[in-house]
Length: 432
Image (cartoon, rainbow, N blue to C red; front, side):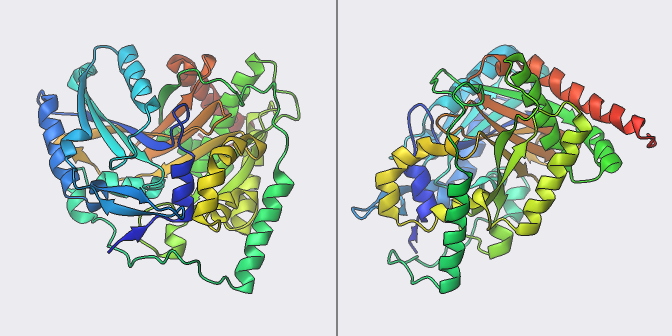
């Protein structure tokens, strides 16, 4: 049966722009036991993509502003899967950055896969792009897992949902109050953008995807010493990295904060397996002006605990829920303008993408790394995405700032932040 896009899905579709494309991404690297030919991997991906109903569909819009997913009569998976060959880490990073900067063709099913061979040690990579109107991060993981070997057999595509009416339902008084509460919180938290802040920019310079890998064991040691969650520690590391960067721009005063939107998956709460976006968020003030790394972690832990206690359907961070209550036609008319208003509410996106801890492979080649790539809102200088896979943490920046575009800088600053938190652990007399 036909599935209509939700108002939030339509908002992502309407906010698409050539300089700020709104697709999610991922960079996965694999270690084959024998040399592989890119055409072989591409053929496997085409075969598996053909079996996923959602990947055969494109969005068809209506005159009233709505949209629905329809089968693309001209669909051929070969039109969405491409092969490349590079030599050297720098050329690989440059190619990934170029691919992620290119908008998807929304007249076709909005996704692409790029197979890249020539990596060190005989490894290859797959770069995935899925438009945000198609899925949120959690659903993107579910779709992506179906391309892997054993996972595609155990994780089926979401069941077909009954057609959603394009006639809005009458909201309850409680629903109206919740909507007004969110809208009020959003309005109270808006502020003029700081024009001289490096985290905000009007530049349309080419963006750069920068990736760094950390040992999960190091993060767990910090978590055990100071409490909180793995995500709390990762947010503290990101805050420290942003502090280093802002300090280099003389923009990290004692009271400085970077307002981060932290997306929250709503699927487990709603129990709805439908595709599309089911997200809310927390708005967290990352304390980049605080010089003490342990105090930064405590501050973030306290904010996250307070936000979780209030719930993801309260406060200014619940903006996606508010957007989902706006009629589709309003999104069609207002989204191109509203999409540029993100700096009024937050400075950057920091998203954590959950991955299964089981070994994964593609055509027999073991998955080694999985870097999620976050979209970047107009006016923002960087989008940050994190993932944990087995024994590693993967950190990815999508940025147009030259200082942050250096992978060696990112590696170095994250490791310095880890060392600083570990040293703080020793100072409070805790065991190794």
